[in-house]
Image (tube, rainbow, N blue to C red; front, top):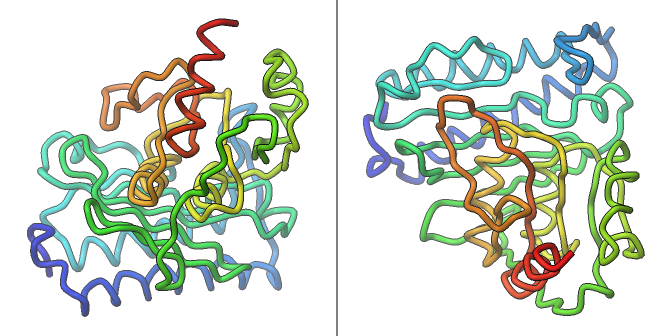
Length: 265
């Protein structure tokens, strides 16, 4: 068991990563089972796999860290995140529509947050078997290999990852609309690929929550990148609303140039 992150040694780290891989296997097994789908709202879809993975991970983390709080997309917010020094922030399946359609673009996203600062981020894509891990001030890896953002400086050369639903919105920005865009669902996976240097910009114009971005924030920061709102303001985690208006994630040079362009437009 752990009471603070100073006790997160290699054995416990391995145990946590194995649990997340097991959660990924639960998701993969639904390729052979019936996926039950319902709608929490007009824009939010949930499946029985989301619920099963959420319960599995909650039970696991409560066992190894009983003194930590819990926040998940598929659990009622019990305010433990406000009352504890540390809390786990989890999205059991980020990119639920991709999961339903069996596209290799959904992830399991897990972060450990200290008060309002994400300090550990884990993102796992069960279909590609990419396991991303980052710890504050200790770098970022994918499958144990160090990763960094790329060095692209020219916006015109960029590959940008967005959701299909946001394709129209991006055309309102003259400096984005002619870029090579890649459509994918999971914002966590978009940011992870930016951290890995495989894409240049991860972007979302729609509101997000802490569980969408906390793990990705640590990963990108430790890979040398920057994540903010589109106006350049820092993202605030563990707020009362848990709402994040939009997100821009890329290397630091691109970030500076894009923010300057948005301010001028």
